Length: 203
Length: 412
Image (cartoon, rainbow over all chains, first blue to last red):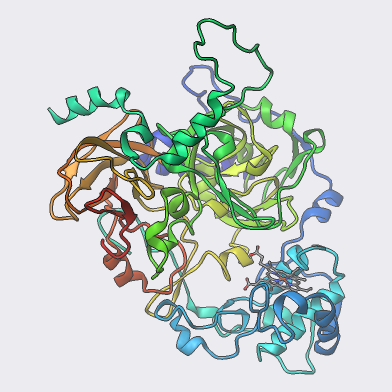
């Protein structure tokens, strides 16, 4: 309950701060009805509690700290076989790209000069800041025509293979939930927050 | 005088008739249909009422999907009037096709750093106090062919160049209402929005936006969302790049950090000339385009006509739009038509007398934060040639002495 009250206060503060910037599109404050006088309740009591089971079923995301990674493991060799069977047709035998995105780039993108030179090849090895993203995306969206069909072991394997192709891990690496979040990708520190703020500056 | 003039001209001008000289296509189509058109409609009763209305067969406005089973289609900006995009002409962009969803089985899970993880049915969402807002939605890749060197770009219509923006009235429950309902932790700062399409597309959104003007939308222009727009429920984030407006919304997870998913690392990031890449560049900056005259128009001859276009900004209202009819040497303030809403397409108009010579027409939008649409050179200087999103540089149309209009890339 205390937590709730603090959350509400925070919400109100955020609303107030935002309202100063853009009054017209600020949401109605918790306590007043849109355009009217009747107070809104703190809660409407709609919806039903989510069960732990249904949360587990949908909560598929994997974050850089490793949260969300399942049990299981996969080796580069296992991944190579799976990749040849289920990915190579679209992404090229070595991950060089075919009908779909290139997945391998082993140079450093000439010091991450992608902004200066659009012809530089950009892929997992020189552009992706987190290895966990690869697990998340392959498990979530690939292969294109059978998304979500790979077992955790298969995803670990193909992730191991792609990381090895990108020269991020050795050819005999085995990837699991403890190893993957510890991998530091070459592009990790290249990403900066948006500094555009409106106003006269062009950024 | 000028603004009075524009007011009087406006109702009389019929778009293609006023502008198109070599309009054999239009005339041909009309001729083909005369067979079904009585010579005098006052002498023969017309057809009866119908359940669902259809366009006049004379109207040809269409989206342009890419080849094959396409993952995007564009809005025919040059065919539209005012600021509202008809729902069936709203641009589409998806990564794994449009899912078919039974609203009776739809539910939205909100969980993570919340006091009460909750499942909402569509009926639940509709019982909350609703909010409607007229706002644009734009893909952040829109307009790339006005930025990168492209030998074919001069023959792009407004639709082909910038058709990944549309504008609708969206109705739904403010996300803030749902966040209060579930009791968001004070330590939460981001949330994940996830789709139930075959890409299970997901994006991380700053919590501040959730409490600002984010909408969990179930209606567009007065009716249920179209399947291509997320039926039955999508997230709508006014002013944010299209990809974050997650369609077919199945899950919201509240967290203390962004999730760093593929669509916010590998894609939708902007490599900069200094060897960094900008991440979470979510807001769409001010932009405008003259939609008339534009390719493939051909001006019928010298004289008065109206320059028309759209301007919009993800940061608020359009403050003014300046139009140049002499390649940027001088600028005139265009008339903005009511309503001028925040984060919304805004219609601008300027009466123009063409003397018949070659010239370049361009528009420059300024929003209420004081941000003015940059030239290509200005944007190139700060972003470099490798950037892939947020192409809001000034658009320019070259009018040749024979009246043909082409996109003048690199002119501004």
